[in-house]
Each structure stands twice: as structure tokens, then as C-alpha cells.
Image (cartoon, rainbow, N blue to C red):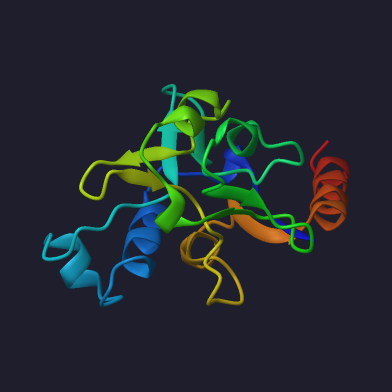
Length: 159
């Protein structure tokens, strides 16, 4: 299964991934509507920095997701076929237990709808919008083994 994998050394903190995510999840899927606030849309990926390292962060779709275990209503469930942590908005009661248990802080409150907001890996796209928008390739949608292989090759050639 493909994963969203990050190479923090390549992240410029340009926030292109956040913008692409917000546009992808806007009703119109139009940049101006999302940016000018005509639609209530938020990114589901967050670029964090400590001043030296930049890290795009979103739901990791964990193998053993604590958020799913904490969800009392079944609004969060792990798809056994794809491995994705799916969100069923109609079941969410806004208790925020998933927000409190996510070790990555990747689940956010959507106070306008009183539900959560989290990465869904852009199910209508071949590749998530954040990975498509990343100008440096810091965000990749690939198999873990392929990513690890590329990292080893990079290490050998730059050692």
C-alpha cells in the first residue's frame, strides 16, 4: 500500500501542500474561493517548524490507530483493505476524544460543523493533492520499500 512519506530535508515550508489540500477539499475546488474565504475550507496537512527543520504533517493512517479506539460512535474506522483511517461525519458527535489521543496532532476540530477534520488521502485522486503540489518532492505518495530504497541510494551518493 502506498503511504504519504516525508523527507524533511527537502521541505522549504512554502505551504503549497496546505493550500492544495484546502483547495481540494473546497466545494468549488477553486483556488480563489478557498483563499478569499468564500468557502469554509481548511487544510488537513500542517507544516510545522522548529526554526531549522520543516515537517509537513497529516494523519498517518496508523496500523493501530488510537483515534479509532477512542471514537465512541464509530465515526472513525480503519478500512481493512486500504489501511486508511476513514471518517464518517454523520456519526461524529464532536467529543474530540480522537483529537486528544492522536500522537501526531493531525486531527483538528472543525468548529463550524462541530466535527473533526483529518487527512483522507484525497480519495477521488490518483495521488493526494499535497504530494502533487510539493515543488521539491518533500512529500511523496509511494510504497515504503521504494521510499527506503531511494533514501539508501541518496545516502550512498552523498556520503
